[in-house]
Image (cartoon, rainbow, N blue to C red; front, side, top):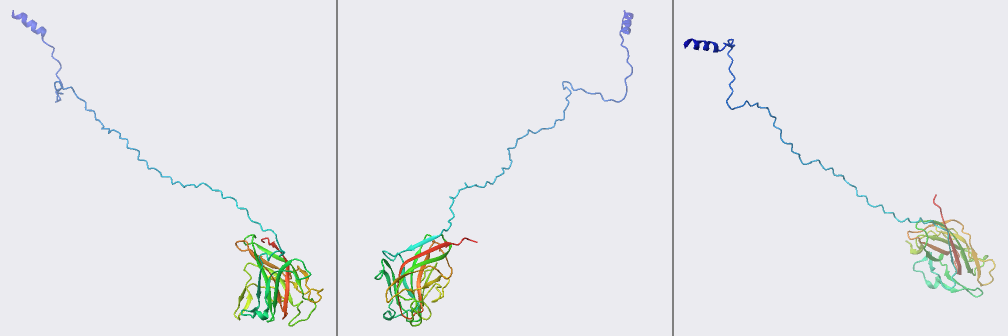
Length: 290
């Protein structure tokens, strides 16, 4: 039954499709079992490594603040008026006798120097410092000195003095070189330097402070008056008070607050002078800074 077969074949023949585009297109060959892999462009991201904190440490230079120590407040010393009184009732109270304006190798037998704490002469009560000397060289300085303390260091003071003495020299009298009463001058003063008698280039003992000479005062001693008393009869001793200095004396206390006081007689009378210092008073008045 060949006709049937032919029909059947014709009927079953496939429809011929339109001729394909003959453009030479390379068929996409799909590799069996190998699915198409899309290669994604990957950016390799390196893991972020956290570097250890290398922040520089700022060294703060610290200034060591020492605790403020409050020094105890030292009170400022203000100098005050100083009054000193020496009566010599029992002793010389620290006063020392000295002599100047005579040869270093003087002859004691003719100068007759003497001094010290003694009872006052007949007719007078109490005690004092006795001084005696014979002026053989037209000049003789007899003195007593004493150091005091307790002043303000470096402070300056004006000095005034009152001297009570017992004398046997008449005020109106005549003597060799001058009057025994009017040519023996009482002086008082003060100095920072100790008032000593030291040898000069001529071999005479001279004071190393400025006491002046005879009737003239110096920068460290002023004249209070003379030893003569108007009421002397014979060889008796009478008390006399001198309290008026003829010029200013200024003294500065040393670093330890000390000064030297001095009282003496400067003689132009060439003869024997005898006297007692019965009482000596000093007033030191501070000078306020300008």
